[in-house]
Image 1 (cartoon, rainbow, N blue to C red):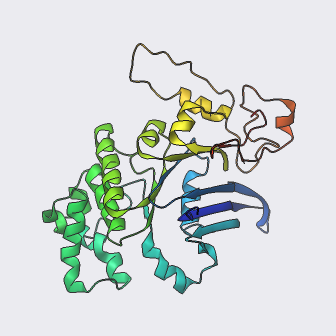
Image 2 (cartoon, rainbow, N blue to C red):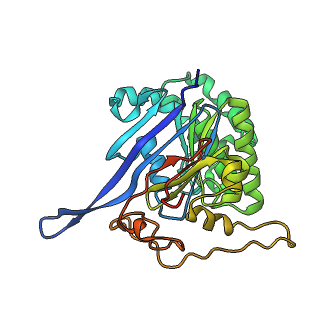
Image 3 (cartoon, rainbow, N blue to C red):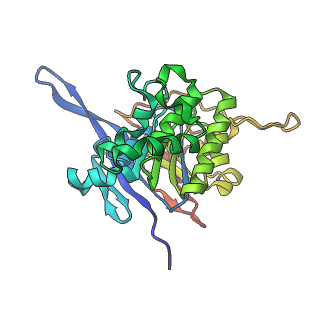
Amino acid sequence: MTEQPLLSVENLKTYYPIKGGVFRTTVGHVKAVDGVSFSIKRGETFGLVGESGCGKSTTGRSILRLAPKTDGKVLYKGQDIHSLSKQEMRKLRPKLQLVFQDPYSSLNPRIKVGDAIGEAMLDHGLVPKKELRDLVKETMNLCGLSPHYIDRYPHEFSGGQRQRIGIARALILNPDFMVADEPISALDVSIQAQIINLFSDLQEKRSLTYLFISHDLSVVEHLCSTIGVMYLGSMAETADKDELFRNPLHPYTKALLSAVPVPDPTIRRERIVLTGDIPSPANPPSGCKFHTRCPVAMERCRHEIPQLRDVGGGHCVACHLV
């Protein structure tokens, strides 16, 4: 019997209206997420990669119902998150958490870190106030922070420590699923490795499931078990990590992988340089969205939208050439 995915995303679309004219009528839409589908098994880390502006963060926020979806379904344990009432969603919210990209702006500078970590527990009534301080200290210790820092303010911490505070704030609610929205992009390289290892350790200790959003393929290769590649709001390719790095099929994926540095000066990798600008999500190209920059595009690509299909072993690709 096949295990049911913890989270399934089915044809998710998130469009934002473009207003124009004297009466501010809707004259078009920014198609931030345009028909994305994938699933994440319990205990798995799904990596979502792509260039800036491709819709990765909006996908994560739409999954957590922090951004309104236009169409599609987000199923958590078989239940459509977007069909729940506000009261039902509030009960579910502790199980679905988000770690923000910017560890500086995600913390209120006027609130002590102990209060910031524990406030959601009080808000949801999950623990008595007299027991909260000990739980906060325990969670801080688990995230590599000294419990002695509990009464300090955010400005007294480094960027890496602030990100640990953000992780502790999500972890204390004992979630099943976490969206990590480029959580290391604002950190120094040496600190990035520590935060990546923290995510791995917490996953092992708490049986966490992650959607890890990043533009750094070398980080995703280290942390994720399955990878999805997005381009202009749509999924170009999804596959097991080892399969994707060994046998990329979509021209866009090949171009991204060719830019990953190889830590061996004797190996020379041929760089695939994409020409042209990224099209606007408000006016995407007809047919395959990538055809305006694809080095191997053919006439069919200009008119017919390729469907994401399984080409064997769970390796899915949206390309007419495959």
